Each structure stands twice: as structure tokens, then as C-alpha cells.
Length: 143
Image 1 (spheres, rainbow, N blue to C red):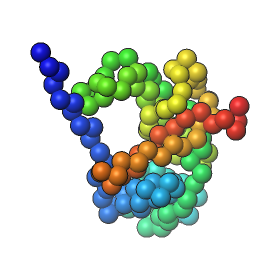
Image 2 (cartoon, helix red, strand yellow; image 1 turned 120 degrees about the vertical axis):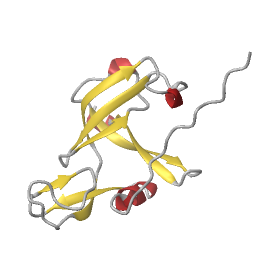
Image 3 (cartoon, rainbow, N blue to C red; image 1 turned 180 degrees about the horizontal axis):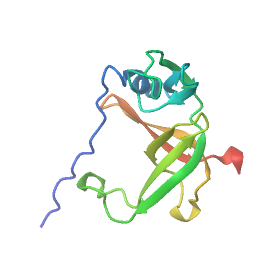
């Protein structure tokens, strides 16, 4: 009996509001919105600033470095498309600039993970889909 064909992983579909974020990732840069009225960076992309509802959001480049805010290591697939990617290391990274970002960790053994671990961005290109995904790995400069 042969194994069923792999289920393709879903890919993001940029919208007019999120396109600047995805465009920057394709260039291996990270751009998120900043609100002068709120005096802070915000993420996920939106039309109005949270808290103030001001129409003052600006796209600014950030380093993407941060700390591991929380994580989980999934020993079983979270869905069929990830059945070949175990263990799946799911994480929330808190960027140095403030906002938090849901992602996956790469280039790290699960035993090395701890809340507060310094991490840096890894750009994973999928040219066949025209998209770059943002993953994270331990930051050797902070070791």
C-alpha cells in the first residue's frame, strides 16, 4: 500500500493592508506599522491605530530581533500539512520594538528552548508561491 500524497501547506495571501509586510519579507527585511498617536509599533497590519483609532500608521523597518515569549513543541502534527515536519516548534516572539509575532522556530533542538531566549529572524523563501515566511532561531550574538 502506498502512502497518500502530502497535503500542501497553506500559504499567506497578502491583502492591500498586509502587502507592505509581505513585500518587505521577500526582500529579507521586516517592516511593521508604527503609530505616532499611540507612540508605539503595532502588529498585525491594520487601517487605524489601536487605542486612538487615528489614521496615522506608518510602515517602519525593525530589526526583527527579540525574545521567545512562549512556545510549545508539538510531537504530533497540528494539521495534515505538517505531518512531515515534526517536532513542530510553535512560538510567539516578542520583538525588541514591542509587538509579538506568532511563528515557528528552526535550527534549534527543543531541549534548548526557554522563555526569554534571544532570537533572530530567519527568512524562508517559497519562490513557487511568491512568498517569504518569517521564522526564528537562537541569536548567537547574545550567547
